[in-house]
Length: 308
Image 1: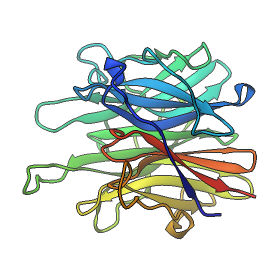
Image 2: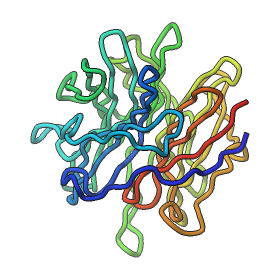
Image 3: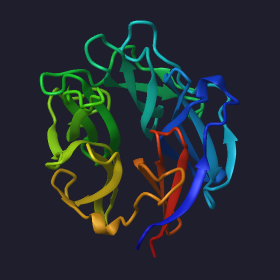
């Protein structure tokens, strides 16, 4: 049941000015009828501003890129809005009235590096273009989450929409090089409609003693497996590394890092960090998509697990 790295799929080439720098946080949508997987990406320009783009890969062989967006599926927000300095995809959920895209919206305030809250956009053309549900966040700042509040996984459990998200209120003090590091953990909440969310969640996975952040929880549920979560954690000594946890109810989690078995490569595109995992199951196999060095600067790769 171990994962096997299959290599890099896609890296920014500079052909598209709005997507020249990075391809951040792969967020998959399985297009079974077309035998494709669409990976939504936060495609950053040279100024670091992200727009939502996508690539499509062969569902039988994700190393084959079949199509690449030439225009953003979701552009930055209006000046002064919470997402005017970048939008990054987080979760894609097909629903009866369209495809829902939960995304992170970035704004650059004066006294901290950034803050990021969660927006929602909907597509009615099969997921190629999205329109905002509103110009304000669907998960905004609260007393418990002053700077970071972003949904990364959403699922309907028959009674409510379950959501796993990143939340936090601080940056660490600058280090000797003047760098500040965001502090946040993984939290859980529920919504009756997937649009209106409570002001308070509960901590699902907290930072360990040497960590300052754990984030991008990607959660899948299967009756035979229970809940599985792939995420990433970072310390001052090491940038993001992939981690894994299991749960029976989606609330209380136990770490199972030995079952993941994916480490940074000795050299190359994912030698310094592995981050922003997302998993697709199809035909007795699981695909794990992730970013390598530089928060998507070196692109997107994948790993394979035979589930049988």
